[in-house]
Image (cartoon, rainbow, N blue to C red):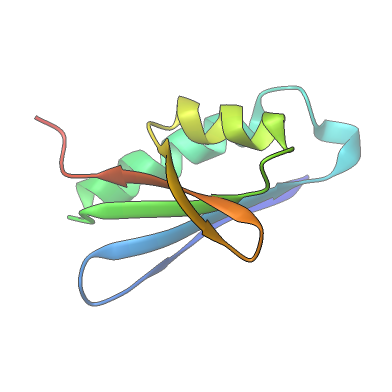
Length: 89
């Protein structure tokens, strides 16, 4: 149905992404997987989690926001950088 992945660097920062096949979109699978991976990453001591989302892709923005990331004013290759910084209290 899809995949969720993160590339973790030595500085405890992760680049985070997800893909869900068209037949399964809109059912909450990406949101559930994103929240799960973010929780796991934070449990492993990852300090910063970043995703890159095209500004017109509202569904992906909702997935990122639901996982605790927030849009920044930074852009890379036409995509907005979303970021979660710090550890859970």
